[in-house]
Image (cartoon, rainbow, N blue to C red; front, side, top):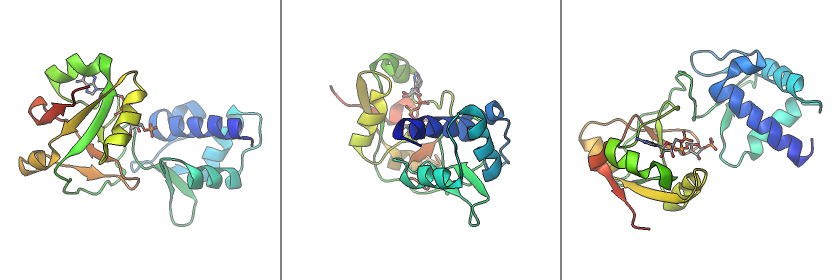
Length: 184
Ligand code: HQG
């Protein structure tokens, strides 16, 4: 696999493990796990280059956001977070820091200022502990805008937060009163 092929395989794996397993003829169990051999077969069905366990292990190990985990005997694989389909990846509930950050695109600001943050197509709203990550996430949607989230106050008010194994903070929604928009 060259680096272009690796990127293409990685994107396809993300699609299958988070959003559309049926596109590759695979299934996820209720905890989001897919059979490793089935996933490898699906990637081979979609691309002409040979894809094997070593290639999959390489993608999992080198993924920039550590998006995937194997089970202990490496027969199963799942995405750590980011799903749009309803799976329970057994996210641990955790008390958040006082402030978290959410990056978005300028085009969403007027709607967010009215509605607060909602998960849209995903299961959760994604938050980060540092501003730089939020700027990067926001840039995926155009000119980035960063919101500060009063997560400590939300938690004291009874909202639940989860921390994925790859360090993304997740919560179901963020009402407007807990949001502060950074002046750009
Ligand atoms: C916006 C990437 C209008 C929200 C990243 C976001 C992240 C609203 C967009 C992960 C809204 C959804 C998730 C409202 C929220 N009105 N727009 N009320 N509430 N939005 O891609 O957070 O590379 O589903 O601000 O690193 O951008 O996939 O979510 O702009 O961790 O691993 O609706 O995806 O990771 O966009 O990104 P997304 P996101 P991966």
